[in-house]
Image (cartoon, rainbow over all chains, first blue to last red; front, side, top):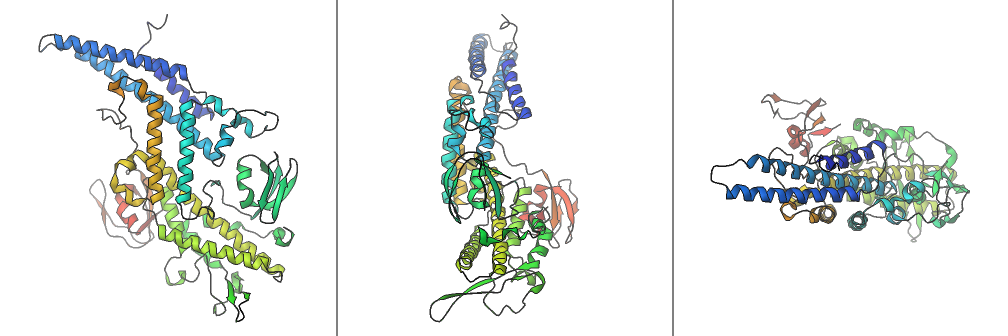
Length: 222
Length: 282
């Protein structure tokens, strides 16, 4: 059907539009496997076209370079498609890294499948179904990224003094913070002993002790 | 929790100046509050806590009792030298404003972390002392808040560097001359990150392409390179910390910055002066 009238590179443009839409709406779109495969097919097709054109020009007589513009055209299309593919994947990686940091490096939380929709309503609803939007390679990437960061953290002088994963948006103003428990998170050790955080309760606790729980959406600042 | 008097509700707004983007104000605030906690060893081996916290006007100039922990570096900044914290702020702001990754100052970080550790253990000691008064608890809280805020700056500094390390990972890995600027952990992370990213590209895209198209390092005419490099031509605001030797601008003319002068220049122009500490980025 319209496969016949499609220009080279048109599919890649769709891919880029998707990336831009993802940035503009600040959401992670589902990995577009179909489109990526289509573009890769186009690449193979272009490559075979180039090869046959090269043969033609080699068989032709010296000085006959009528095929050169054709080859150049294919070549440009190939390069552009490849770049678009890489840009699409890189853009997604950057988004995933943002997500990763926004939950304070809690990879299991990020990858958790949406098993219990009732329990995690608020902040988790956005992160709950992330897994289904990722390609398997992206999951692998996040895993090795996480490993690498953990290793980086242990290489840093003082892992327990400076928590690398804590948020860096606002400087802390108070030592303590009043929190409301949004989701049960069990018994947590704080400077005044262990506290069992149950949903609905309020506590005044040392910020450093619960910072990661706030980031991960278990607690909410009041 | 009860003994912590957190609801003193004192005004901590001035603390914010420390983390504001104007480094010149930081020395002022750091001078305005000093404190020292001095655990001293008694003859009989008991640890006795003396404290001569002093806040603001009540400052004790002699400092004869105990020694000044001065995490804010009060004891050194009077002679025109900058304290550890001021130095950290300068490095932090430079790093945040510079397009390129700057050499890491591991000595400085280690020194600060040592002080934080010491301050924290002193605070623990004081807190566990049942005799400490309400007033002391209030001071302890100030110290703790301050330590937290200092940690925040260190964290932000490390994260800024980490961001650049990842952004330019491939560039860093392939240019050995950059390696000296990084700490060992950062360099290793850059190498691992490069590997991970290239593996991801290979698995998702490149391996499905025909063999002729699989390279990631293409130098094509008319196309920008695929590996991002620091853009050293980016304009930055440079503030001269002392009188600087003349430098040549890209258009051939010379500029000589006087102490205190702020100029908007291309990063490549002031790069050397920044490394020598003659200017800071604001």
